[in-house]
Length: 190
Image 1 (cartoon, rainbow, N blue to C red):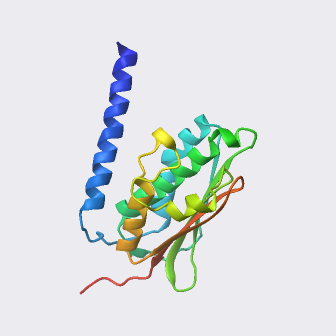
Image 2: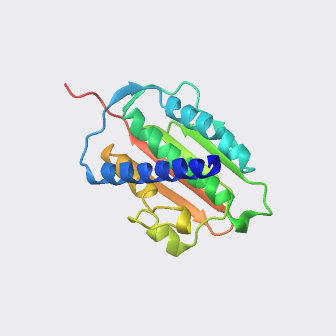
């Protein structure tokens, strides 16, 4: 009975997450800008995902740029983007094709010229072929089979687009993936 209840709770959480993702995608919204330390959402995601990474045998590492100036962005939205990217990176490392590797995921923050912040999520997991890379931000596309909904990266892109930012990736089959998210420097509206 206890085991069955745990399965039900887990499935309800998955359904809830998918419903929230669909609602967020369908809803036109403006980011709720706040003046924030860009390292905070990265640190929160790292702390949140560290035990999951460890449980799956993935080394999760973080490198935060020192003295990053505060920036205007939707902290909850960027947290969601980074959580999705780190979750996907860990999943890529636990793919059966990576079983012989010592897998690592790096979460970094940088201050590129002309941008408020750049987040990088790098993994040395299974990587993607060209066909997968072309479809990665399409609705309901997932390379995870039944484990994925095909909503996460699409919603991550929508959130970054709402900020006027850029999200891109480089990936090679068998050699891992790097996702980059750049957020523009913004001033508060008067």
